[in-house]
Image (cartoon, rainbow, N blue to C red):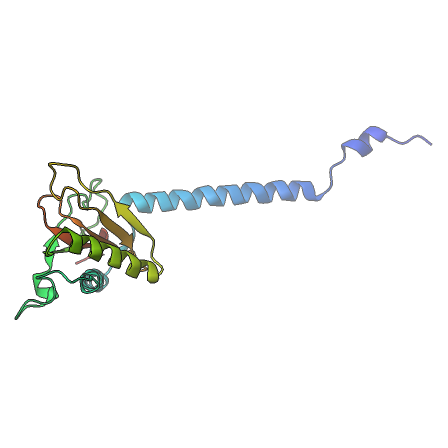
Length: 198
């Protein structure tokens, strides 16, 4: 009795088709998911409530004040001046990058970026460098990744004074470094750009 060997060799297991369909489906879902994420990133992230934004402002300011209080040796003027608190002397900054470049925000939606800074005054370079080293150790003790900021070059504001930066567990960027426009060291806290209702 003759058997058709060519039919036997070309026959595919019945699961082959299902595997292909599954792989194609996973690929398509991944592409769709990535596309949705990319669109949301382009738009600037999800729209938060005004209450959530105000909470982010408070978190950002608190994180910055904790960094200032952690400085050892303490700056001459940063530790709660007479009659004023760190909250009082926090300088609110603005960001030119936190804008709706593509016109995607609906009516009732705006963008803001909570950024606060504290200008500091140390008795000398050695005290500033000691404070940088101490804050680096404190942030590492908290499990944070610390990055060094190279000192500005000769002739630039803050020349010769290195800094450090980190991102805390709430996603707030913190830095101790010379100010970009003056020679004064500053602690800066940046809560990131947020879309929110108003």
